[in-house]
Image (cartoon, rainbow, N blue to C red; front, side, top):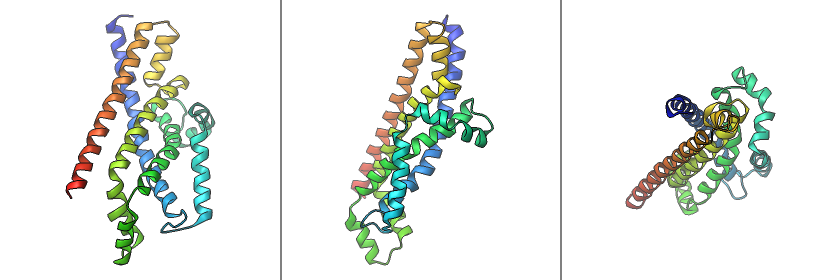
Amino acid sequence: MTWSEMQPLLTQGTLDTLYMVLWSTLVTAIGGLPLGILLVLTDKGGLLQNAPVNKAVGVVVNIGRSLPFIILLIALIPFTTAVVGTFIGPTAMIVPLAVGAIPFFARLVETAIREVDHGLVEAVQSMGGSIPTIIRKVLLPQALPSIVAAVTTTVIVLVGYSAMAGAVGGEGLGSKAVTYGFQRFETGFMLVTVVILVAIVTAVQLIGDGIVRLLSRRGRTA
């Protein structure tokens, strides 16, 4: 396969991969951030201490994290079809990608929130600050560098998930690698898809690390 033949396939595969990853990252952040905060607030000694809720949420998150993505992808076919109308294509893959990543991201958010100095929380409480105020003014700003790092890690995981999704109708670089690289024994095509995936992951990591360093410096000078 010549470069002129590979280029449109690789371009479309890259665009589909970025589309799946970006949208699933957005859905994951919307779902995983409050879930991670809830795990901290309802834990023992938390602002909303509630053992039954904490255990229930923890069980759901642990089950979600323990399922291999390829199995989750297949198990969610009825749900994906109900939500999107199909289980094939990049838009359909956003559903299982987000569902698979939300528990993972929630645990990372939980860890980030737990690192916040409890003395700051107590200080705001003593001044009559409500729980929403503590979340907005203390927990999220103080944990922001760690949360950004968590988003970076999650995006990289989603890139890997999207490649697996390509094997079962998800399009993207994974689909192109299987169809044209593996099934047609085009080693060169397979190699190029791997290079593109590595480049995407490297770019995400560099951007994420840069934002974390910037936020950390601002935090120290604030």
